[in-house]
Length: 271
Ligand SMILES: NC(=O)c1ccc[n+]([C@@H]2O[C@H](COP(=O)([O-])OP(=O)(O)OC[C@H]3O[C@@H](n4cnc5c(N)ncnc54)[C@H](OP(=O)(O)O)[C@@H]3O)[C@@H](O)[C@H]2O)c1
Image (cartoon, rainbow, N blue to C red; front, side, top):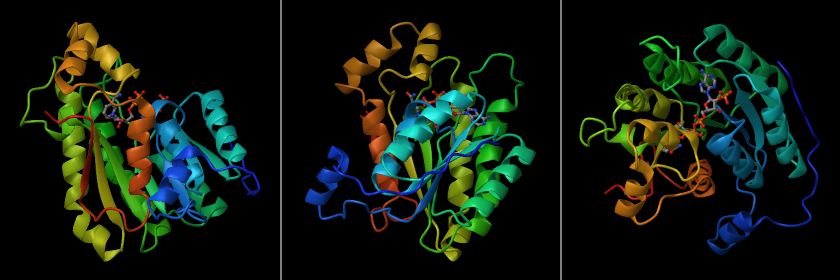
């Protein structure tokens, strides 16, 4: 485990995102003093969520699986915003790793206000048939249970998913993505079943579902099996969201009094 901490310092200029929020009446730093854990926070969508939560004022724990330098880069960006960063290496399908991550959080910060369940997968080569379920269902539920002792009333969990998974069983899925979509849908359903327990604890659950996201790896992998997929989807929906836009919607859910528990935010066309 590796840790980076930085003392909070005054920001000299407001990022455009926080300036936009000021116009809506939401304070510039609505997450000031809060702590967040972003799974899979070392790259892509997770890295952008981590940075945007830090722009809102939160200290960020970045979970990453293997590439420490990438996670360190995200940590440095968070520290440049004057927030604290904590690096938590761990495979979330490994219970020992998960236990260790939360022990670190407990000893460093003593609490967790925001849990962003972003890490996902299942298209990796060489994984067992049950891996997608282990990652997108079992690991997600285990993370929530492990987080309970650190989460106080007023905390928030954000589950990140795709339209392909959210509408699994209702809308068709591209070749090869079926097992991943089924497992992410199972993960979402399992978390929603936990809402009564979450509500007893004063914890909100918000789900954010996205269309294919421009420039990311997953649609490119899917396109190998379904040539023309991205262009076809772009044409059908008008335009596809980009990483920053999707991440902004995810980060915004963590702001208190935005969305009620069980709410689903859709980013990009659902048609
Ligand atoms: N890309 C899209 O078009 C799209 C659309 C809609 C929704 N989403 C959702 O957005 C989220 C992020 O997607 P993405 O496209 O950014 O995915 P990605 O590029 O494949 O990144 C996945 C992230 O999850 C981490 N991860 C995977 N398996 C892990 C494990 N066993 N333990 C710990 N971390 C693990 C990876 O860590 P390492 O880097 O260490 O491997 C990586 O940071 C997912 O929930 C996805 O369903 C994506």
